Image (cartoon, rainbow, N blue to C red; front, side):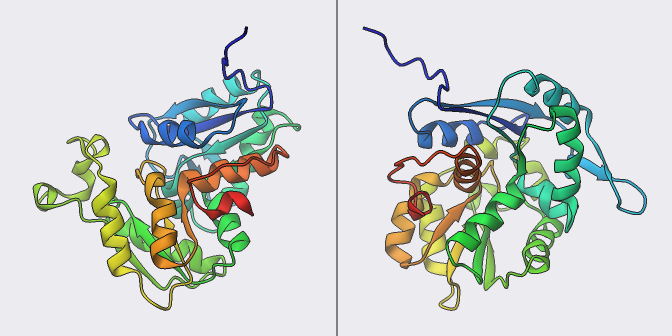
Length: 262
């Protein structure tokens, strides 16, 4: 009798993630349907992971992106995703298309490439959300928060408000840029995150988007949808959903939001 080895016989996905993060892979593994696998390439560059050239006609991808893309090119992947909300936000309008075009040239014409920005927008549209309540991780500084709101506004959405999660008194005096180096990424708790979102979500919001692929949250998506009676989307959930779509896979994934039933 053969045991499951998660070979990825239905699909295998490549995902670029921040080098020091564990959340993206953990959340994908929790949600993945049978016989679908995920394979990570780690990136240490600052956001955005591909820098605009003069005139914003093209981008220069970071060395880690080029290396990972060359490795992914030989892995017979169903789709590749740049799992980094911040890069889409800071890169701004047009960045997603530019980096997809650039990496597609390395991966080959038959390889599908997407970004977390594109995935979250597709998930918002599929869920009928036009006025999302944006929830951001505590390590996003003010400039990144503003870039995130502007990113969705520039693409036709009208955010109903935003929340930067408060991780509690132990972190109150730590600047956002120092939180991850001090261990915030591995000290995340989802119960207080649920409570803060439920308390702060404005009545005029027609859905919630929790941004940041390193932001632990998929465990509370179902509970928040039940409490708020609105769609609740997250970065990793949206990218997995979109990659499954791109691979032509319809999967019965329960417990991680209504998005997977659309």
